[in-house]
Length: 123
Image (cartoon, rainbow, N blue to C red):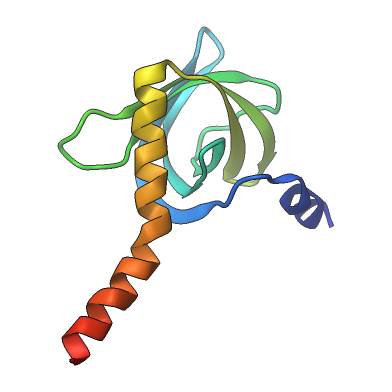
């Protein structure tokens, strides 16, 4: 029931992904995890590190191997369940915001682009 309620509150599409991430909070927690879904306003991370709802984390998303990570200066932990927790992005500098928006836009286009490529290959 809780998961359904959380889903209803989301305003942005989340895309299934598998990216490395690192996160830290001054003096409280730090570690690495895998981002398993991403939206323009937040993400879900799978990690062995226990983080508590309400914590503010500095997050780095390694979306493209060999490229600098997307840096979220402050993301609030909204929930945790087992080895996963959900973040809402709160503070991100303008250049990182542009990088994140462009990346999420590419995720939106991917299914369409794959369908188009398949159509072209079938011709």
